[in-house]
Image (cartoon, rainbow over all chains, first blue to last red; front, side):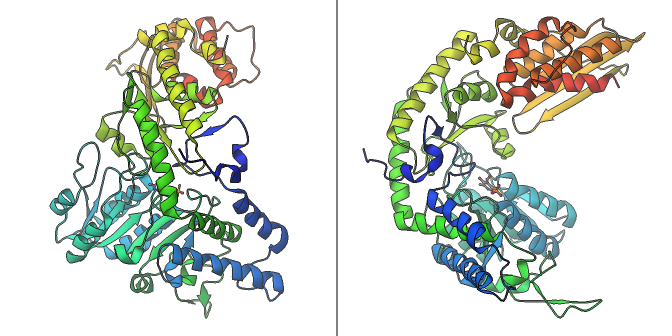
Length: 401
Length: 140
Ligand SMILES: Cc1ncc(COP(=O)(O)O)c(C=O)c1O
């Protein structure tokens, strides 16, 4: 057992509270909170336009953040676009690239594992462009394999919209191999990395992905800030879909031009405090090392699995998850009944469909409970969770469920 | 009694396991309303037959948690035979009760009063309300 050195950095964990809902959003360490506060308290000013010290400094920090994130995923600075989050990033690609480039002859390839933000934008593109939306056949218990992907891709496939790690199953998708195959078919690959960046090292150049999206708030950063990585050649070709302040040049009564990427995609005042906070979060994670994060949380997850595997009345849908996500139900107990038991014990889990209905259809269930283990969780917390799962099973059985 | 024991009363469990007036009819005279809650998977349909300004019959089909299934069942038992005005008043009082708002205590909620434990669980108010909201719409 390793002692947890990080929990003390998270002020929300100051009492009787057991947080296992990190896939929904992560907690924020004090230094991230401080850096958001630092901007709001000391530096409030707009960026790229104020000709005074504070504005200069804020602009610097905002651009520092872009650099830090670029380095974190091995991209060039100008390939990093700030957005509101994964949802905004993925919708942007669907609208700016999908709607303008696809036709009725094309195919879009996706999967039932996707979070709604990775598939709904493409359902929309398909219905507008008449392109055909196809689903990769999953392997039990709910995985994307290279073999299945090879079967599904055709020479008509223009876009592959796929997750790196599913927020329900937590399995790592073989993105590198998928990208290689997709590129041979001249398809581009858009990766939803929202559940990946906080768990595994990501190198967009090594993966050779075309677009990669993630959210700040799931990786210890603030809400309201996210990232879209895009290959420079692609970003140069794509036109902005939002127009307004800062992104323009040469505004006339009936026409205007725009700057180069990423500025052309960042119209209006951006979440400056969020970007500055995200830099601090990335620095915090980098200082620990994503490998270390992964190692610690994996040990904790295995410790959890070992204890629950034999519990009668507990159904786990994704054994051996790669991202410490456990999706489960108590036998015969609807997830919204079960969640109240955990909530009464100050255990935060998630109940429902987790914005991923299609995978619940695939699993043939209405809804599920989901827990996630992250760096601030401890062995003692796992013990309490396991104990509570057992108590909950007994409680609902006695009630007659 | 713990908050949880107060939520999962025997009557609720009994309705959950044996829902009354369950199963829909294919009859145009019934006014039908279906509400789904996509975040939790609840899917509830209520059908109401109004004759002579009274709830002559009511049917329901509910999938979801015990609270939503039982509250649909209790609803159908209580509302049968009520005038439309009484039905509306009872439904309003019930919905106020579960959301911890003030309501007219002189209105008899009959068996539905067992859902008062819901107010301690803000996250479950939707579960207890969904069938009743669906029912109210069938009266309009
Ligand atoms: C896999 C996955 N994709 C996309 C999202 C959407 O992220 P956001 O809500 O931050 O836009 C989430 C989180 O909810 C997720 O888990």
